[in-house]
Length: 441
View 1 (cartoon, rainbow, N blue to C red):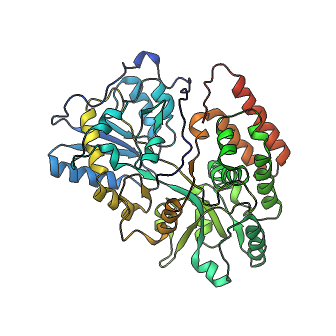
View 2: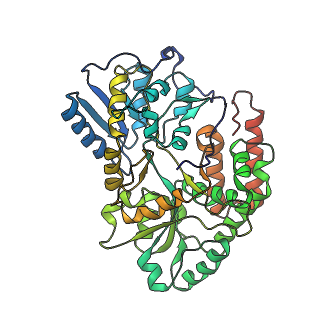
View 3: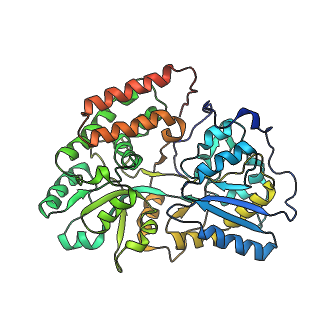
């Protein structure tokens, strides 16, 4: 995965207050002190992959080292962590999930800088940082400092049911023209071409809007949007992408019920064959495992591109799920020691086998990798441009507006022209707000 990434360079951190200033710690310096035999508390987001892998890793780690590790998790773990930060009673290691603003936490001094730990040798004697894909590591850096660490790396794209496509003689669309032609055939066969996770517009932004901005205008236009540069959100590439989404809407390509569905409900519609395709990350199969019929084979492919677009057709979107060490943790060395254990290639291979997603650990793709993951792996390895949705982390309030704007567009309550005008106007508000620090990508 050592490809071109969209990574913040020399950017300032957001100023929104994450926690009470009174509990802000002094800046920590990783890599000092000993873990001795103190217990290690790990708190993790209990999402589609659960926390059972972290629990089993903790048991193995304890068996090998004699050091006790406690693992707990919750689907909304970030809500339980915030009062603990205020009280100063933080865990040693945490994966707080998508509801935790880790960049603001870093700016508040609540996270431990991790570069000195990464420079320490792993059990093989090489610097620990070499166990990670270097590009994935960069997504955890702000102003040159490593503040969070990646573990699993979801790849974003579209999915289809191999049996359904084979039965109807359908081929996954590679271009927007292919999609328009195929969609008409699907509608004629009584199948909605696409469903989506309507209650969570982020899926549609990453599944539709951003890939098509990249396809239309290339990485430069996408970076301009992420940086909220003047005119970026009213550029021709944005206009074209939004107009294409509206075209799919108007032609009935989207399942009518989709806007009211949450992620698992829409994914169930896909599994039941009521929709032929769905945008989702590589957690799809793991998240829906209990509902998937025996013998079903779901395949990953990249969103169709504009055939005359400026972007590289091989471009693929990924994200990292960040792990971090609180600056006030009681056992930082133990936290790092346990996470280092999880990033040993054999442990990471187990995660790929059990959970069906890629990791940021070099050498973690096993020979017996799940079949549904192979296309995603090949897409990343074969891509010239790997990118990540940076605006979600950098400009939270603008992104919330963008999600609302997307919902209104898909509902037919907003025209493409209104979408673009309002998005650019909202970006201008952010640019003019002196209380919001700005990022240049």
